Length: 186
Image 1 (cartoon, rainbow, N blue to C red):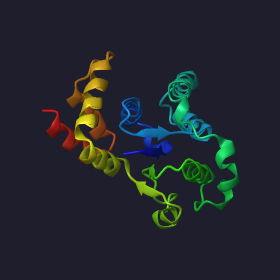
Image 2 (tube, rainbow, N blue to C red):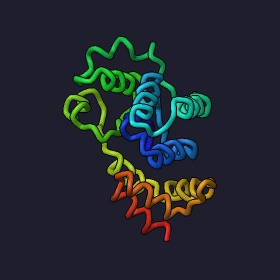
Image 3 (tube, rainbow, N blue to C red):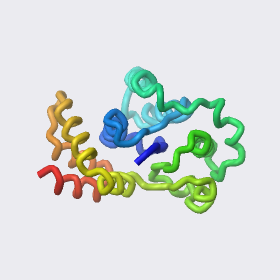
Image 4 (cartoon, one colour):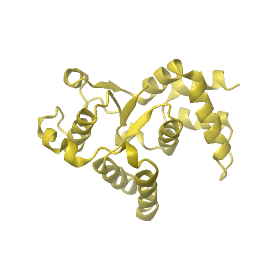
């Protein structure tokens, strides 16, 4: 499926973040990231009281360590930021990073600040997480279900089955994907 830039609003709840990163670990797709994305995510998680600053910093440190090869450096996109089609300064940075990193898909719930038409002119497709994951499941069903099974097997506190993960993903908003996943992991 290739490279994908995942907007901050997709990275929580954690069930979607876990799946997106696990799919990268299993080479099903490649989530790219920037320091600006991680900083925005840290601010949002702490502001929403989802995690403590220390816990959040620990998670982003793990992303930096385990996914170092998928980082897009600020130096590669900083000159593009001001020309990007969005009112939101953070989202302009994300769009610029996707352009500089030759990332064809931005996954976001926020279609207002990621306008499909202007982004298409830049060679970018905007997809919501449910649609993106359904497309990925259609393209490589064995790989996606294999990742879900592996991810469930790694869960210890609390233990989870693949169906439990599908239920978590449904609650997180990827309803169609979770339903289709349940059909495949019976």
